[in-house]
Image 1 (spheres, one colour):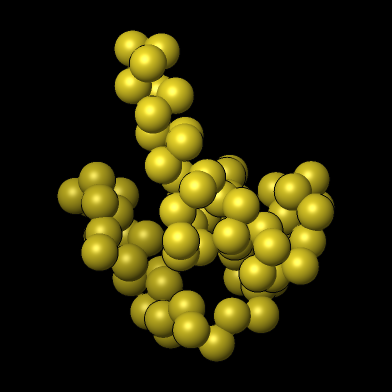
Image 2 (cartoon, helix red, strand yellow):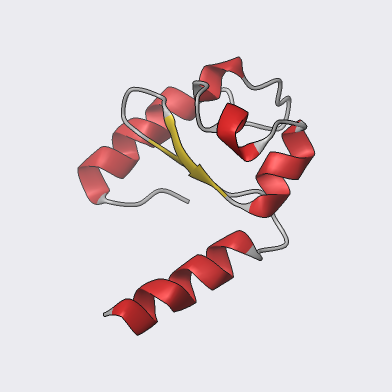
Length: 77
């Protein structure tokens, strides 16, 4: 299991696109290196803010809908 977790973390943190894991309350639980760099925060700062605080014009306006779908299905694309 540790090997699979390490593989996931490596893929997540080295992805070419921003990836952010958020809670149902909108807290940022984890972010990959690209996301942290893109938004200009330190990792510590980034993990203390809510996703709605990000200035991100490319985040869909239907974010709440996508979060609800993720909770219901377990994923959202």
